[in-house]
Image (tube, rainbow, N blue to C red; front, top):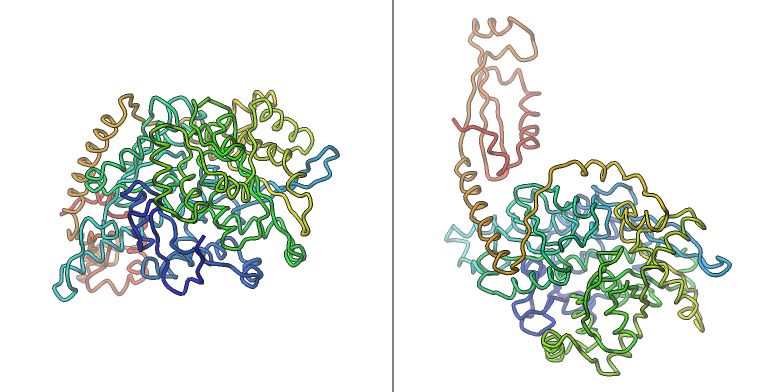
Amino acid sequence: MLHSAMVSKPVYESTRGGEKGLSFRHVVLKGLADDGGLFVPSHLPRVDQQQLDRWRTLPYTGLAFEILSLFIDEEDIPPTKLREIIQRSYSSFFIDDVLRVEPCYMGEAREQQINVCELFHGPTFSFKDFALQFLGHVFEYLLNTNALRKQQQQHPATGEKEDEEDPASVTRITVLGATSALAGLRGKKNVEVFVLHPHGRVSHIQEKQMTTITDPNVHNISVEGTFDDCQKLVKDTFADLAFKRKHNLAAINSINWARILAQTVYYFYSYFQVTSPAQQKAGAKVVFSVPTGNFGNVLAGFYAKQMGLPVHHFIVATNQNDILHRFFASGKYEKKIVMPSFSPSMDIQVSSNFERFFYEIANRDSAKVTEWMNKFNETGVLDIPQDIHAKACSFMASYAVSEDQTLATVKRYKEDSNYILCPHSAIGVYALEQKWKELSANVSYPVVFASLATASPAKFADAQQKALGYVLPLPQELERIMNLPSRCQKIEDGMVALKAIMEEASKSACQSQSGESRLVGKRIRSRVPGSCANLGSGFDVFGIAVGLYLTTEIVVTERRVLASLIGRASSCHNHLADAFPVMMADAFPVPRACRKVSPA
């Protein structure tokens, strides 16, 4: 792992060596490298004890700013804008602290405290909200600033025009991914979203959370197959470079570096919540147990540890789809058939983010990683050299949890601690119960145990019924969506059908955008007697008699609908003149809402 004090600006590179020296703006908007690799920081910043001491008392948003600033150059997102994006990203969470820790106990005598870190208090009740709320706002900001730069380039004095195929200069993107947490992307300007999910292999509530988002820019697509099939469609589409460039494809899965980056923050925050200042001073380290499918969540923790977060070890907790556990147990990374489970978000046999981990434990040897990934893609099997496997195990242990063990854990924690776990979170807790004694033996510093709770138990009614004999009442926010209309398209013939849907939606979006753009610059005027406002019936006659008229002018711009009051009577209505443009800007966000305005 290469480290840096981050004196120079942060830059990124592909795990397969084909692209280097790229900006944060570039890698976020591009998503996946053209050589098929994943983007990683070229150098990782180091955090010292003094920084940890200073960060301990920060609120979540303040901590997020400190950490994200280390990876995002000011030219990409200035500090004031980054603070604003972070505040907006986490203002939608249901609790002020964003993340809550609940103490439970494990061991035969329940003698050992386990800290359950609840990551599900965001709008979709999933840990993914931590990253996708942030990513949605980042997409919107970067596209807006790209558009402004493009306008400035129309003037000869600004220099040569940028390459329009450069992702760092695009003004509209097509986002493609396989994820259930869409709230952060709905309604975003110049962002067209296509989201895949395996047909019949997500919980009913997860499906409703996706398919009831019917914003014009969001397209839900169900795929006959597994989550791995969805991921393969995403990667294969990105591999078609002509199609990728035509539609400016960007990623929302954790293959997008911004998602991993945003998730590193909650490892730091969790550490400060589960340890005391005295324990930190004594050198305390945390064991994190992480329910793991696509490897993005635990990978974020790995990068936090590499930055200097005091982590003793990670536990990669898997369900019966145990490709990761088998790798850590034997050194063989082998794809098998995906089996449906009560923890559907972990029903994965190809973990996309594992490539980033390979890159780090192989000392950033891109040629070796390329060879490994090509072999795995061809054969479905990869045997890692013994020294590389030993290095992987020095960071992470693993445990595979069966369906019966998962349900028994849900039941036991309800009975013993009056605490209800979702099936994914129960897997993390059970794996920690099996490994904590082994991992804390012969250690000279205090060890604290934490398990990440990745989703609200309310989202998985089948598991509740099976484990507890009843189903929890839904939170109001989830109850509300159950009767909303849904929109989803099902495909069975893979790439051909997916590209056809994307092409058709792209045409419709362009036509809609063209229609909206024709409104820009239009002015609407209405003329009324100036004394009629708020004075009551009959006073307009007085305005006519004395010749006082008030003209309201509405102007459609690129960013908003602006209103102004014109005429001799306008000075009598300063209060309205001050308030009206603000009200109009809120009520009519442009361009989509411009359809509500009829140009004169």
